[in-house]
Amino acid sequence: MKAPVLTTDAAHTVHLVLEWAALAAGLQLYRWQRRRAGQGGMLQPGSFAVVVGCVLGAAIGNKLVFWIEWPHLWAQYGHDMQAWARGQSIVGGLLGGLIGVELAKLLAGIRHSTGDQFILPLIAGTVVGRIGCFLAGLNDGTYGVSSSLPWAVDFGDGIPRHPTQVYDMLFVLVWGGLLLHLRSGLAHKPGLAFKLYLAGYLVWRLLVDAIKPVPYEYAGGLSGIQLVCMAALVCYLPLLFRQALSQPAFAEGCK
Image 1 (cartoon, rainbow, N blue to C red):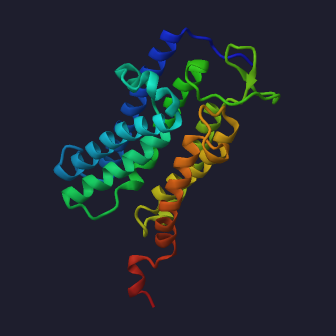
Image 2 (image 1 turned 60 degrees about the horizontal axis):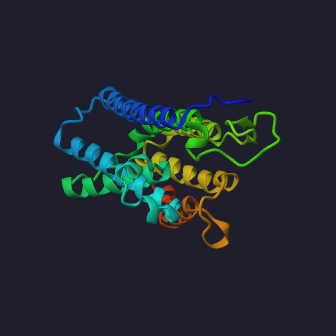
Image 3 (image 1 turned 180 degrees about the vertical axis):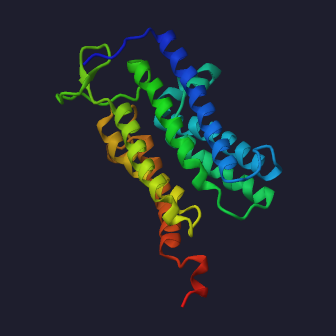
């Protein structure tokens, strides 16, 4: 199977357009969910703080993790603002957005969980963004290693490769769709569905990035993304297990 082959400039343009489309789709779905739940608009003080914290945190996180993945390019391109604009990492965006939201909630005095409403926007944003990655092909660096599987894709260099961008889309659709289906059963533990989504995605990336070319090898041959996923899981899994094993808030009144 051969993928469309774009010039470098065309690939960057398509990727950028779809990145903005992913952000727009995510924001609209977040608004739709709030409206459906009878909650106020995103411009309300608390809600606006959460959205701003998410966007700013994601913007910073995806750049930082990109440079963790590609540290050897720092000396050559670290001063180039265009290089900073092009460098992206979904894992960095997720973790940066999480930190940004939590800081915004702390500053705004918000105590309730807001994470579950981000699952659907994240699914849509990842799928749209990964379409851009797939179309960018060899210019993007998110493709897999060579493969003889029947669905392997030639991105223009004559080498059939794992279409890891497609794998990513399928994972978030299946895992996120399952959690959305189960969300009503998890409603007594707000935020648990989001924690499961994030932890599941981090585990997934830790595994699937093993069949991607490693731009810079750290200890054990791991990539920067894999190291970030491992560190995040060490910090995040205790929070997930603590909430999953805790008693629901209404349990005290049940006999």
